[in-house]
Amino acid sequence: MSEKYKVPDSPAIPRPGNKPYYITHICETCKTPLVLNDLLENPDTPEEEIWYDEFICPKCLDGIYMDWPESEWKSYELSQKDLEDSIPFEQFLKENRLE
Image 1 (cartoon, rainbow, N blue to C red):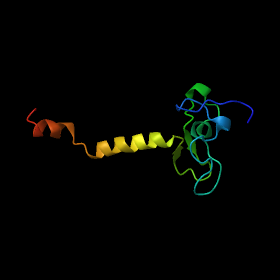
Image 2: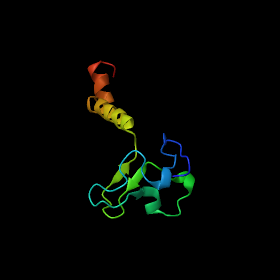
Image 3: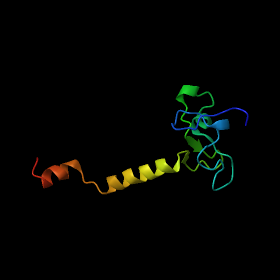
Image 4: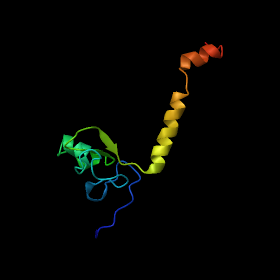
């Protein structure tokens, strides 16, 4: 690779060769190379509208593969745990006699 690429730290930063940077570049199910989701949906998508962290298998079409570093997944998992442990706002008000 002769070009220098910036380590992608944002969904807006292109990945080298339009391949995932943090995750495997092939589908876990059928071993087909992943492609950018936006370009599969519309090959004429303007560059400034492409999310470079969303990949899809053009064969399986089994969901979006997110090209995130492991640290981002850990952060996401923690925030999901927070949501699981939360209660509805109305319940909080009622339990704390704030309604």
